Image 1: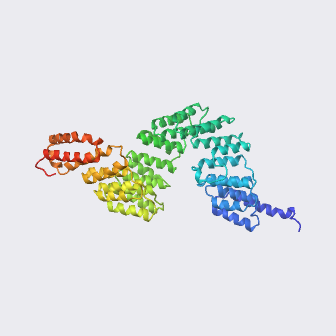
Image 2: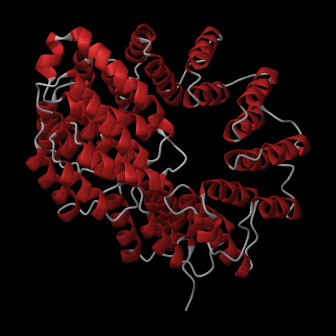
Image 3: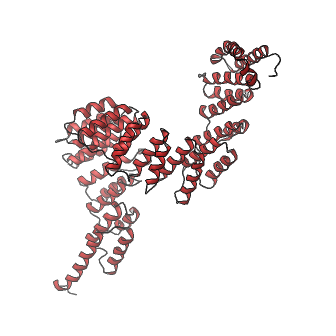
Amino acid sequence: MHPPNQQQCKPILALASTLVSMAETCRSMSHLKQIHAHSFLTGLHDNSVILAKMLRFAAVSPSGDLAYAHSLFDQLPHPNTFFYNTLIRGYAKSSIPSYSLHLVSQMRRNGVDPDEFTFNFLIKARSRVRVNKNCNLPLIVECDEIQGAVLKFGFSSHLFVQNALIHLYAVRGNPVAAWRVFDETVGVDVVSWSGLVLAHVRAGELDRARWVFDQMPERDVVSWTSMVSAYSQAKYSGEALELYRDMVDAGVRPDEVTLVSVISACTNLGDLQMGFSVHSYIDENGFGWMVSLCNALIDMYAKCGCMDRVWQVFSKMRKKSLVTWNSMISACANNGDPEDSFELFNCMMNSGVAPDGLTFLAILTAYAHMGLVYEGCRLFESMQRDYGIEASIEHYGCMINMLGQAGWLEQAYELISNMPLPSNDAVWGVLLAACRKYGDTYMGERVVKKLIELKPDEGWYYTILRDIYVAAALVRQRGAVSRKHHDKVRWLGLGGFYLDFLKEAKIIEALAIGEAVMFGAKQSYPNDEL
């Protein structure tokens, strides 16, 4: 059988060229699957160029499908370094970056040598793998091993590989190792310096990070943003805003991450004027469509009590994320508009956005504010039964607050006692505060006993127990006491004389002092029933 001549090859080459062009301009997985099917119909399914283009889209494109990319890869009888790199890159960006390390191991077993791009993708994958013990991979899992492999294969002279190593040590919070790579790198650039800033930030060394930042021969938006974000996250909000102003004065255009950090700093300071200025900058420079910025603005305005601004931002958003809905529901619940929280929750469900634990926490807060205990209990049960969301300690705390504020102290006590999570001083403290509100000494004593077991060296709960005894003495005498303000002050002074010792007392002593306070009250108001 004779091989096809040049004339016979022309249609095949033209068809292959067409499929390559189609794969390069592909915009969706449905389109890619059509191209793939057509390659089988035309006998070009094993064409390496077409496969490379299809694999790249499926593995790397935001519209791709990593599982489909892997199936394409498995069709290759002998994949080369380029094909391995494409799939490694895809996994490095995915939710399972640890699989990139597995592919490198497979690559070496099959006798395929890595190149500088392999190590670049590998390092990026390793920087995103948080817990080593969950990887269970036979090759290159530790940072130092990766650096050793880079040296072994002769890629230490590649600046982008060295910068990736600096970044790897930076995200691990290891500035010493980052400096070691930095000092060994020839021709360091702004990316190298920015990695050092990040390393000190992750290590919690803000002063050292600022020193490195000030030494940089040039700064880009990444280095400025790293420093602004570090200050903002550490609650050094004034420093964050000052550095942001310096950044703008230096002619560096802030990006989305910068602006989110600046808005967070404004929120922490309650600096609405600066917040207005940043909001104007966002609108004037075309950032207004970014969901993360709108979410940050909603949070800022809500915490500053500017609900009209909150609704303005929300109503202009074309795309709303789960964070957006949660922020709005929480904003309404915490700013005295619980009915709006319920309406937003219904709108969210109708729009097809699935709620999470934070959503239910916000709605439970709204129910608590309105005293809708039965509705809150039903929602709490529905969250776990219908949505499969496990209740956290925060959910239980909200439920205990709801029950306690409604006077359902016994039910709150039972909920804490029977919840599947270990109780802490916070949830018992919520119930103790409710005991103070209702002057329930019996429940207060039971709660304090629990707190003594959890925090025996602390005494804050004795102070609240003192207040409960005082409330119990006054609860039936509020009208009489208000008419006898001078006597009230005199009586409280008497009670305070005894109760000042309560912080250091044990529970039995606290009960005895409570009886003394009740006796003092009866002496002050002998004709009133206590």
